[in-house]
Image (cartoon, rainbow, N blue to C red):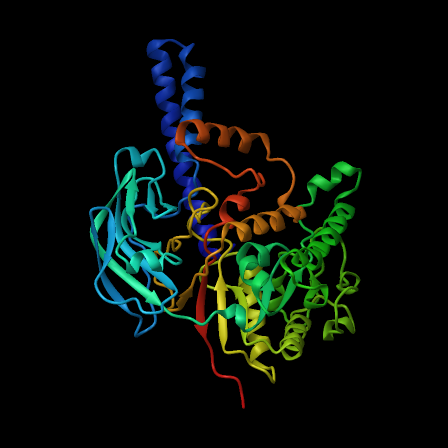
Length: 469
């Protein structure tokens, strides 16, 4: 996590401890007045209420406006919501990505149940108690929008009668040569399975072997280091085998074998090796045996930043992509994700071939661990942006039902997304199901099955300096 997210988490926990302390004091006072037998009953009731309505990690106020700036010249068309329909003043032209900025206000019931906006057959959810500008994703609904028959309705919330539609135009990047950078196995699938499964020329490079947090493999009788080594082998296999489900051949998949949660430390000391925190390994070469080409890091096998940058530079020059897909350095706070994009940009700067388009994705957020909110199969509204982001473009291709099912199955193959939920999370889901109306998909228990399998994928489009002649 970045320093900012650590600060937000500490503040959240501090506030929660304060509220819990006040609640405990009130429970004790009530039990003294009405009888000690009430104390356990009241404590259980308070715990159930917490799990149902106050367990979300939301590090901002639901009354905050989201703040987005788009590239200069982006069409911004007035929109009116009349009789449950979206009426646009002006022509959206051939724009493929349509974002509606509108004020959303929760009803009283919307403080307990997730406010929902129904857009045609789509549904996009927002924070309980929302009262601010939000950005709805209307991509894929151009036909009904042009005809003036796109229906819109709020459940547990009200929508302002007017808003602004941003109409963003992009080429279909699936038609270009694409290189996807995944800090860990499953990042490519979560962010871009829909893109890579229909891309004509795509390669995927995974930076780390994903060996940390291997406790469940210790149940096989392994010690901590052996369990981490096994998990690293399994996830490295995932990174090279699972893309075949999306028609990406093994010779288009590269595993670099660096170690989880070490990339930012490597960046600070570029020539110092940083071995695994858990597996005791220090040589990246064993998990590179199935790579389709030799790389600079193969020479000494040292897990250094210099080797990582040189590996990425060699891959850029080998695959000659026109588009690089990588984590959003301002939105996605995971330390490995931030470092992955930093390494990629350093590699590109020194390469003979320099792609000029970045497609940025966010699999994690600073401020809200439920985004995309709502159930699986819904659309992806823009994430919270309380601090203004760079004015990037947006590209949000749609996934049909068959593609969403294939994406869910690709996630189901990932070893890190398998396994049963802890008892606490199971109880929380049961409580939220019955009291808060939340639903989870049948495809898998991990939260990423809900967050990752959507009607849209979402990329921020950032243009860099042109390739040299």
